[in-house]
Length: 335
Ligand code: ATP
Ligand code: LTN
Image (cartoon, rainbow, N blue to C red; front, side, top):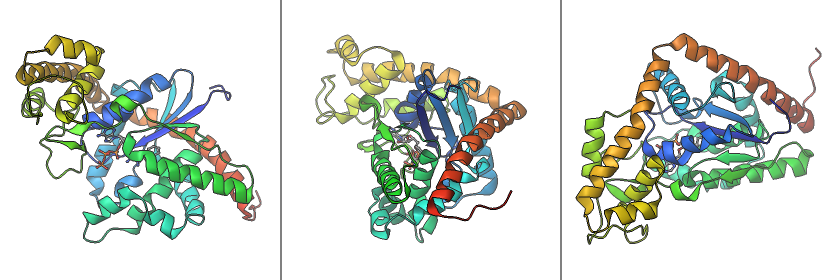
């Protein structure tokens, strides 16, 4: 892979049995076209997945399921490096160094930490330092862009601050990354509560549609989606968040424009729109379910893809970490 192509890195947690439409439209789908013309690194972030408490066997299974879904969604091992975070020890190593240049107050301001900690009886220190580990994920690969959903903007800002601070204090070492957030799909909202982001940790999963969900259940959830007052089918996220969300989902998955869908459903009512959206979602996710299962039926093949991805990741990450260790003044061990 040519060294002059800009680097892209993103990660996703193996914390559910399936990605939901928010993950898929807000993040994963953006990852696919970036494989062309960029040197792409995509990571299943299992170290992040243990910050809230977990079951070991479930984590193992979900790590494979996450990788299988990414391949099903169009990541191509010949054009990207797909790997598991814990296979690359440099992530935890760089996170330690970065944690030593992060202010306690600075880390305390992370809103995702505050939200998640509020839901736990005894939040871990790992949950608190989660954004620093995320910064390490990104900076190790000298990524210039990071495709994510809107909820990750603050973590990207911290990553940029840490890169700039390290460079200023210890010499130019890191590329300062930019967030890559596609506006239209940056925040897919919960179908049952259209002001909240669709999230796997929502109290109720009634408004969260998984890509591996069976068609009957997808149809049911979409038909029960909360719509807005009035009957007009119009894209207006502020006043009509429910309808606008359905239009966004349908437009992105079908390749039709929002304007075209608005015109097609003009005067037909919410029921007709929901039926159409349900069919679009079922149809678009069917091949994802099928291809994910094919990868899961062949764990050897899947593990080989991950082994090749992590070998390449360790190579790049190892070079950056060596520069970091040298820059901060760690005595280099004799070979
Ligand atoms: P949780 O909400 O439980 O923290 P999550 O559902 O956000 O989890 P992650 O693994 O943390 O899942 O997110 C993976 C990617 O999906 C990130 O880039 C994130 O920004 C994006 N993403 C998550 N939810 C949405 C959403 N509702 N709309 C758009 N993008 C989203
Ligand atoms: N915190 C992210 C997941 C994540 C990530 C990353 C995203 C971990 N490391 C590096 C982009 C780049 C989330 O989606 N909740």
